Image 1 (cartoon, one colour):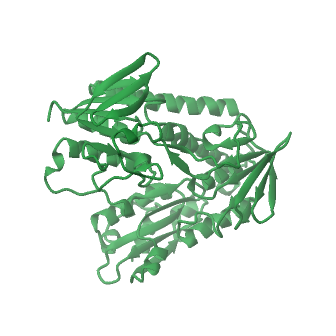
Image 2: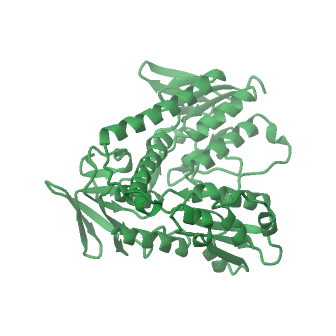
Image 3: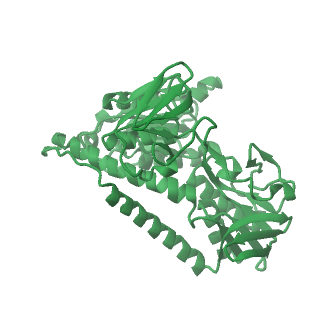
Length: 453
């Protein structure tokens, strides 16, 4: 397999992971990327949003520092300093990824890749066309923010998520349209920066795909901060004013603000890949793949957001590794396929939210017998030390065997703590395996042992 030639179109988490693993296994790899090595969704969405959230979290902590025995402060955002910080993080990460790929002999091409026939990929670059012959082709071009036909982002008052890292000025009152993961993270972020926020919620709860108890905890925190919730309202239009915007909804209500932010999902970057040239099967623009991430053509794979699976960087990274191993013959022997139902995910609000595996509501909908245990962080000495007792740990297990099936965490560092439950779910561990583990005291992780009992 040492002469295997792989052409990867798209250098995000999936493409990078595939390239590095395939190169280590002896493949000759070419990676074509249009925008930024590391992926637009990763370096233009995920990383800057989390960096801005971290800044907002620091501001929130300073405001409530009186609870820690300190004199509270009232910080403000230096937009230019924040912009410099985000640019520095992006440049460092992109440089590290590029250096790693080059050190492994991956050929990196700047341009827009497209398939012209079953084994030929063309890169359209500033220097003209370059043609590459490939034994295998991996498509991982990601996605971009969805823009409805009733909205016209202008980058000034009506913003997409990618026009908000950071905005030119911090909004005084932002109307966020969309109450999924991205929407609620922006609500938290701008609220932490001191802006007034209105959230347009098309359903009857924020985070409609999450545990209602988890969503309720976040809603309570939003209301405590003064966030206005327009529940059961679907946005239908945005009117631009000289000094702001008015967001119109289908129930006749309207929300006026200085800015509007669209956070209503994404669409795959598949329209210019030349998929019709080789009759690759798609569904709503996403490439249909099997458990090995192969398309209907056995030598063409799709990964990351383009595969239509969970739109998480961690999932794309795992898909990339699995594809490289499958191409290079590592998977000729029995192996574990990706179980998307057991992928851990997190929402970086305050408090943080994280979950993994089977959700309580889904189990009840299936008529499945489960055992659910829930312990609040208010019982934790570490939470008291941190002066932050918000949230809880919930563990879902099999009542007959004690096997951990899933769990949810709401509270400080939930995104880190969920790793313990993710390991338990993916390894088939029992609740006793958690209760019999000696955790450090005092730590928030001790609440996991309480919930597992």
